[in-house]
Length: 310
Image 1 (cartoon, rainbow, N blue to C red):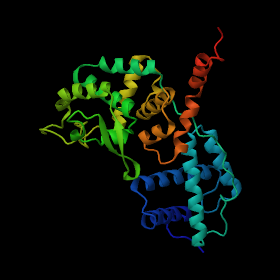
Image 2 (tube, rainbow, N blue to C red; image 1 turned 60 degrees about the vertical axis):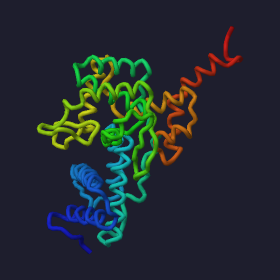
Image 3 (cartoon, one colour; image 1 turned 90 degrees about the vertical axis):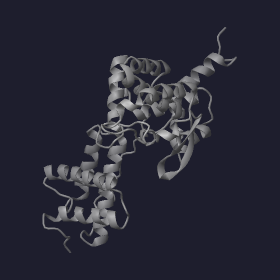
Image 4 (cartoon, rainbow, N blue to C red; image 1 turned 45 degrees about the vertical axis):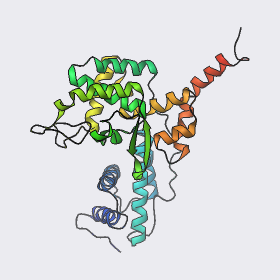
């Protein structure tokens, strides 16, 4: 039985697979684009070996999976691409286009979850100093962004979705809507609140042309009317370079990691950190025990009566 499509079997099968994901599983547009990109990557590799998705055997699929690891992709990206291929072949098998699933018996490499990059307290201070050194409103805005991310553990998407009204009255906590629409309280320390106050004095400089105000805490003259995650990443990279920190080490998510790790190092309970980060599973939060392990071991060596060498 042959699959649909006029541009080759594989092309038609991919098109039908994406349509099924959109209609039957209500996959979001971003998810569909990711699947399309992942399957295009697989087709590109298989094409160089004279194969395509419709006719590839288990050996060819295994070679592709191994290539994902050899390319140095992040474990998350490699896992997502393997998952896309597996789901595609399950769909093709279910439709009767193939009589086998060449990905079924291929064992994916078991890579441990990578430890998150973490900034030290000194590096956080250096990053803030670099942000403050920027001229006028630009410096106030970047300092505010860093302070908010580090003080509250917000995801960058959560930060950029904050309305002005959420901080207009100098709150001690933010009500944040995270993944799955779940709400949680995010704390704000004195430094973050002071940074917000200072930024609000110059915020109007970032309004889109012709606008008298904006509902967003971080408006922008860009197309979307508010600051983007990509632009924040660029600003943080610039600040990292100015602070003498490896720019690959600095990102909005790394500031979230620093928030959690430094809390754990300070003695915070893991369940509290789970709540503050908005993690549904404590297992996701437990990775910070590995990150902070060296510091905690040093505390035991230096503070425990039997650990000290007097």
